[in-house]
Length: 481
Image 1 (cartoon, rainbow, N blue to C red):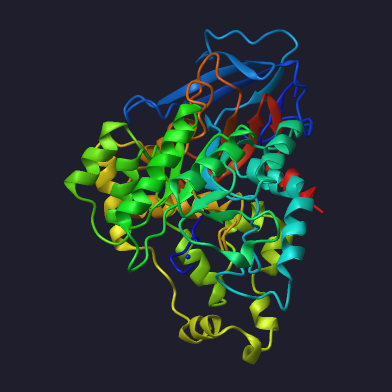
Image 2 (cartoon, rainbow, N blue to C red; image 1 turned 135 degrees about the horizontal axis):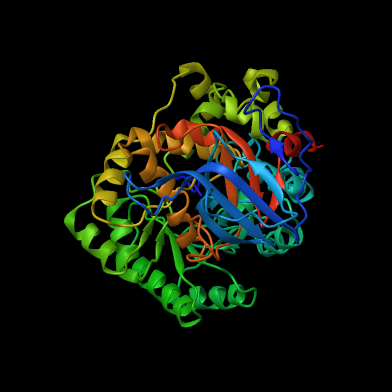
């Protein structure tokens, strides 16, 4: 969570516009879950292969229920009688994307984090939280519309567990892995409405007690917000993280840790962290960090865009990308430039400074450099956005994030691998999602451009399949009220 900032910081043939003169029939909002579905003639992209072998042209995928029943060359892959057929000629199929770092208790709008930008005079924080709870269906839809069929929420109030339950009851929703409240080195009273997302502990016993409370709700992760400020005893903090890790691991639950400085990240690794959910952004990672991360191995999620998201939004420079204009919650997009309608003299001083400077933000060069080195060291990378923080919207923010991963020197296939195979590991669903393979869950994205040629093509979504159901992304977003 960034702003975990260091400052206490979506036939019997459907032709998808492939040939003129072809008859069409409308694609239903959701294909019958029990019936067979076939995508015929597409290029299937397997992110588990190297660049020379990742693409399989003229392939057919057969889905029965919510799982993939067959994948192979169209010439030899039989389509069951009565199956709904999607003509995939000229299209590419990838596994459903995974965002490995989101926060459902936040919306991404200007009012999401009063600890970072106090605009509660315009929108009281309680109203913002109630809005987020009431509009979960809309938030679920924009994830599916963006091709993201699984997300990992790495920290929020205890009502976070209700979000996971709601997603399991909702067809047009991603699969959701959940952590509860962040076990923290610092308090964050501005976010405390009686069910705080961040809870300060000062001893190992307090950490173990909070872990026990969370384990009762069967979390997918326990999360530590590891903030080390000047004068803090790093060794004492590391002991608290180790006690947290031990308590989580005894219950078979992995530990996610927010640690953005090298010394803190190394302490987290020594203490038993399984998932680092931000970049090391202060200095280049060293050999000791690499050795500690290789030992387990640890998952590394760089969240490159989120700090820039804050700066864009709070400087009134945030504008939707084409993907955000198409795929984000329209209400959130409409609210992103509310600052221009607020009296300047009533704005917090920090926002005034950002607006006056009007500087276009850029990601940390050190974070970009570290991502490349960590990937080259064989440490698994997870694409994650920290969505929900100010300026980082649920759903299409993944495309901003993946563009920055490209800027760090990652090839399109490496980025896709982080957003599928790496994401499957982060969601604790390795073997179930992340690849287009027989037996895997039928979570797929149909694109009209080659994602291995340009990572920007990942936003060119034609259809999304989740659990064997077919969704039109534009219809999903249009249905949001």
